Image 1 (tube, rainbow, N blue to C red):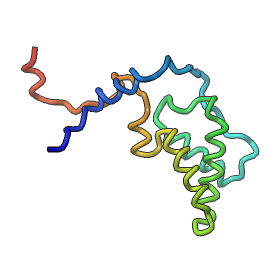
Image 2: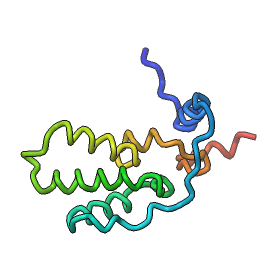
Image 3: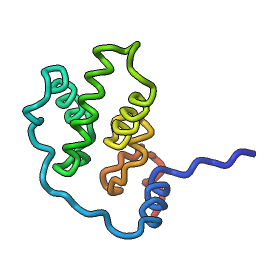
Length: 126
């Protein structure tokens, strides 16, 4: 028989317990896009920044977001000529920002921010 999948809360707890220490905290926001971006790259920057879960992108991520924006704009300009290695890099960057389903599962969100399905029978437990 197949193993049952662990609830999301337990998977998050397991990941957190394996961490070697607390992650450094960057409080500065992502900020505005770099001035050197072309118009289509600027659109990609804005789309990435708007699509990422709240609190994920910070000032420490500016270079990675710039790289992802440039790759995304290049992909949209020429999908057929876009190299697989660049696509792989773009996918990894987007996942690290929580912009893919698997990427969102890998984010270490506090349990209070994890949406839970309401179980009407929970009221009967004391």
